[in-house]
Image 1 (spheres, one colour):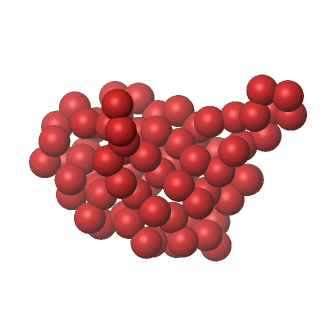
Image 2: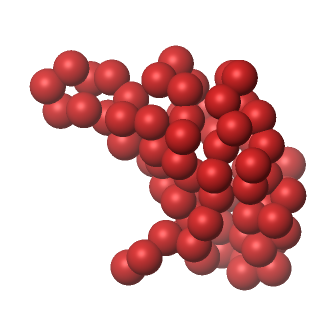
Length: 79
């Protein structure tokens, strides 16, 4: 199940996101979206978790929590 994580601080790293979501289950893939020209974060990422119940638990637990002083938003990613 693929999740979209929005409103990330520009300084948030892929490792921080991976650590946050790993507390709720196995993360298959974590990709922080970067600007091609500057290499800076665009403020959102995708997290893929194999187990749907773990992904739903992560979504419910992490939506509107604070990471690096930003209130993040987590939702199902559109394919």
